[in-house]
Image 1 (cartoon, each protein chain N blue to C red):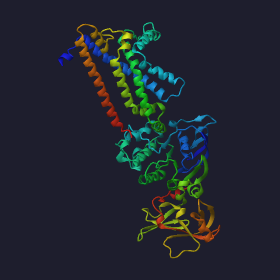
Image 2 (spheres, rainbow over the protein chains, first blue to last red):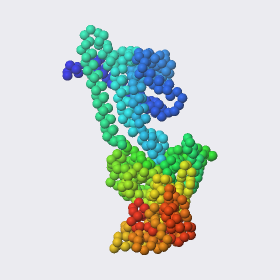
Image 3 (cartoon, rainbow over the protein chains, first blue to last red):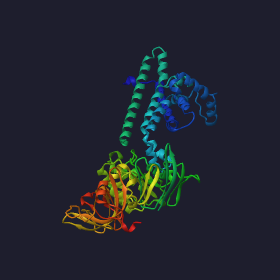
Image 4 (cartoon, chains in turn green, orange):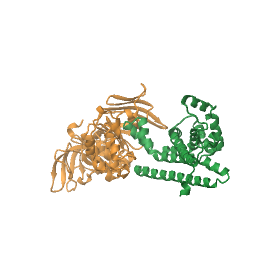
Length: 234
Length: 370
């Protein structure tokens, strides 16, 4: 056990950074994830198929391509990157925020899929009933739709988190592999495998990866079960 | 109170073209499935937008397509009880009940939680989840939830249709109390003669998207020919009567009606209490002279005022018994054998045992009628 936990400062940083990046990626994806899932589940508009395709793109493109596209758009000289840096002071290139962005984008299709499915499963008659009781559409969403899709939100979030923990290609392409800044667990493991005698470190970090992913999975199971019991859907 | 609906709407091949106005305390929209009654009630609730027309409740215009008015459902303050209850599964019964209160402006809140809980007998259910309730309990909670939003009108869309007979019998008295003890006007959608005859003060009868009859329940229910085919056997005269006295020796109650005294199985009601009875046309026999040596206890003298061809071998005879109309369904063969014709003096014979819980009930309080 000591052998496992006896990490070098750099390794600790990689673990901490990975958890931070994955958490931020997951939380930041949630609002747009819900919005896009709602649009796809219920919207009737021109270009819906196109939107669906764009959302799913990170799932089918090679991660390196996604990372490169992010570099082009959100890099220092990219249109979005320059804009965000100038007006919001939000810099992505070669920062942990960039790693979070890359992880968020890669996990986004998984999150949207899970939320969309749960929205499609919501009985819209419940929402109509809430409307006749005086709730305006915003309240209906907050008090009926959102609680009813909670299991989908949890599932989607955990998927996005797990995907972010494992993201490698897009991250390393977009923000490189800088210790303490953008070196997440997969990048750190990769680095270990590239140097002689790095096997032990790679194995340690691999085991830690497994533990974190399993913990996330178990947490989601417990949460989902608790929500399910509370709901007792008829 | 009044409800005015004047609507033209098209759903594929099906056209709804309906105009009615009702000031009754419980107005039944009555018709076979597919007659458009649920579409109509959904329009009043604001769940469906009619192609053209006008809807007014208590003088408030909710829909006027000419003027471009369409009040959204959450601003109508119209309570709705759905056939499938639609309780929110993620909330307790208590939270379900409280839901509408949040959205009711304080000065418009008239519904009182304790009173509603007591009226519907749902006190023991408050802490439970909707999934743990029986069908009848769910429906009572759904009624309470709609009431507690303090609506100006209560809509009920076949609230009993998905329940078995025992559950129906459990809920009917609560709906009667609702009708008699609260001031909220009710529009009630149903395809059941038994429910409509028992509950409604006014009936709007629909067929194929059109109003075929409307008015006070006793009058509309005379039109046996308009009843949905599968409900024809239940059709019959609806009479508002009063308990005169009880015959304890034989376990019967004597009711006073315009047609004369009517003996029914013992009712748990005080003398003077209003009772509405439905005499099924198929339960009525006709005799040309006062029968003797007959077991049936109710023999009502009257005059034939209508003879209409019924289904198959039957004819439907309307009998005026001192102002109350009783309907009888007999065969054409009997009609010819007895030489029944308009204006003929006859006796309508009804067995006491043909009255049961389904066609005998607490009536509308007489003083408030009309």
